Length: 295
Length: 305
Image 1 (cartoon, each protein chain N blue to C red):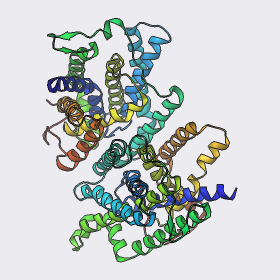
Image 2: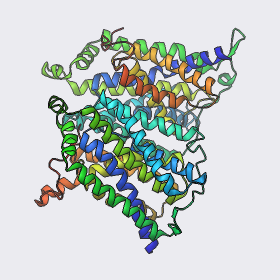
Image 3: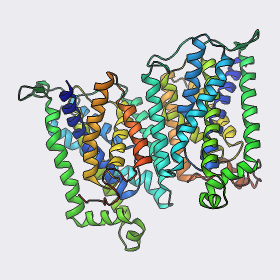
Image 4: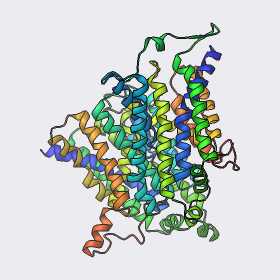
């Protein structure tokens, strides 16, 4: 029983890795703690669902299209919502308050249009629970979580460490004003960070869409944002690998909190962890030395 | 018709109490605290639990206020270490944590909420009629505004503003900054809990859904519109806001839609304020018309802590 909860938590946590890394990327590069990050997750999942169920595209094409639209939406959010504020030199908290406003606006717009309710794709080859060494029954989505999150993390780290664009992003992350003085195009890095963040968030959305037990629900927007926020804060704010590790640990902690209390206190535990990390260890588990793109 | 207006005014009173509470920390201390809705919920839930358990409302009220003050001081505790963006995150954490506690714990309401909260009555005087309840709420609002007027125009109030402007300087002058912070948070919590207590006895039904992050954002928008760090700012902002649901209902949206659209309106108002009028609507109007500041506030707060 215990080990089942641990493994479930581990895999759920791995499923959060892309969305949390997206938030870490956005926060580190642009300085916006984007509390509306969960919107990208819900948006990508819902779009993919609609494309598959209504227009009857294949899942692969639907996912690609939904990913494209969400990435473009990330660009829109950065250019229209946050850029005017950043241009005026708004502080971190003003930017975060704007993102909370954006979260409430978009989440309720989504509720108004689409209504409440869980969406998930059902395929025969997905719902048949594969069995790991005849001990645990896992869904395909849980199996996919491992390679997908590792690939996402590797892609993000490669972008940051191996490309010129990534180098500019790291420079902006470590000292924004100096980067502007050096003539770096901050607007470009902001937009790229938001687009990449949205893309990463949609990967988590697709994973959950494929899991009939989890599914996509507009109500979950805030929860996903909360989980990613805690992972980013615990992972050291600027470290993608730290964020990924924190995600896995957080998944296990959430799962164990359900196991311990028999009730759904996992969100309360996550919120409490947010408070504790900001107050007690603002540099997170990775420590102060963590820099963007570092391992 | 009269009842309708009075009910509207009663809701205005709740919103003013919440705005004043938010204004104390965000406007005077300069710490944006979005856990106000949760403290409101603490007051409402304590009153609901006690009065349905047979207590008199006026016996439950002091306990609710004390509970709110404790919860307020608790949310203020991290402000001794962190401020700015970090404090904002902590307050969001408190908001979500308390919201989840209301949802899951059987002590503080639960998923179904608490129904049939009795009307307040004291020594044969029954507050079940709307006009009487309005007078009760008005009394609460007036006493709270008078209290904050005295508080913010005293040496203590100058210390509060000093924390917003330059905390280090205040410390070097030998002032106990931490004490002022905690006390202000406790006072703010007590005011929000007073509002929550009155709210519970008026609607006679409390549910965790009424105390979410969106209410905190509504309070923030209302206060910023009226003017942050001004005594009457929340009251002014709330008077605009109170008509929003009524207008929506007049446009024949159903009640679930009214709730959703109202949230969307507040969220858009927040974004518009941040983009175009970060100092609030009232100050812009004042500047446009060349008014003096409408009430004695030596320096108004900024929405950019």
